[in-house]
Image (cartoon, rainbow over all chains, first blue to last red; front, side):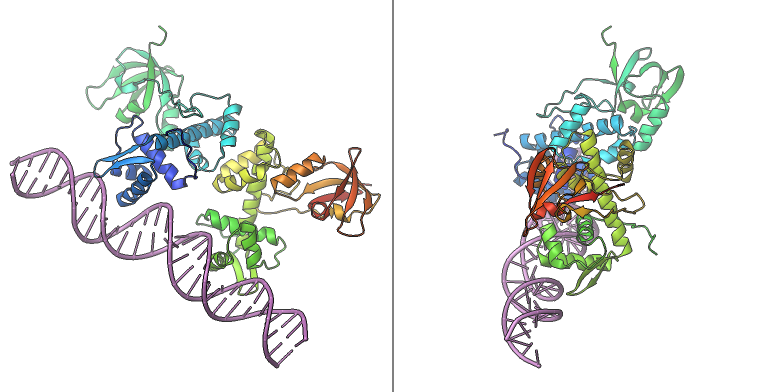
Length: 228
Length: 228
DNA sequence: CTGCACTATTAGGCTATCCTAAATTGGAGC
DNA sequence: GCTCCAATTTAGGATAGCCTAATAGTGCAG
């Protein structure tokens, strides 16, 4: 049953597909061929082909023309990759002086190469952290992930002060920009104004006022009135 | 000319071939197809096929039926892999509690995945070491390697006391055995007897007597009468 | 100087993964 | 209920690597 081990090693490509599908739909809603193709920068026919193979191997369920969903086994493999990726990011930032805008690319390659042993040693060296440098939760070794419900900065009411908990972004340029604004997990931010359209919000952070656009506002996840 | 950068990234396989050829003949003597095949656990025809591709790419010179030699460019790429491998081994032993019999396998995969940046960060964290945990020299970032002339334990005269400097072995079981004998770089050993055949030597190390066979005796490289 | 035992190469195939161009399908809009 | 567009899948092809079986070259023994 679902506890059955993934005996044969998965290829790099397969690991990438599974992780992509998980990221497109952590809740299990079907993911579209074109979304997967876009995320992995591949052509749709290539994705269809791989989907077929993965379905045969029982890693996902495919309803033609409707999309794919991970099976339990596929989900387990995907979460394993997410754990690896996030722990590697955390390790590189903590011990090898990486900044959060450069870790992603390195982790993207290492996640396929590192042994289970090494991952657990890194986790131990870090004190088994529950989140990575972006605030994203790290699945446990047995495949459990604890997603907290945060509010996007774009949805925070005017006048409220919140704490940034998670920066959901992997593009280096954007992360660098976010960093220059002084925004990172743990920082307090007050929403002082909001435009009627385009989800534009004005915030105050570290004594400075900044205008945040739609995309950024949706990437910055905040905790409201915690323990207050 | 020879300073030309290897523009396109090499594949994992290509990197393995180049490293193997370098290891079979660091001095540049031609390496035989069958030796390469044996070292990489591949069939000879596969090796011939790859040799053809690598020659076309200018990474090695092939004289049919006679063997291959690395070109300057091929040698540079090979030394780059050797540097990576040995630095990774050193890093894992120093910071992630690996023992010298388990690092090889991990490094074998990581050497293909790690960025130049990460390699240099690891080197810096280690204080730019000149040798790895087995005592093997680490090529510099610009591709220079400083091989010291050591004497194999099998060739040390009876009665002499030497220091083990390098343990040239990658098989875990053998390394574990060597470790149980108390043999590792830096240890003092006295040769107390020698059999007429099979290069059998009896040594005294840490107050204990041990008999060392031919293969082991050739893997243990020693420094004689240093600074005496 | 010839034949034999290796070693090396060529021939022919397979799998994984990717691509472009050509069908096909599902559902929105009339 | 039919048409048509966009999304998807099928068709057909390429490349990197690897394999086994068959052929060819090398060099030593007689």
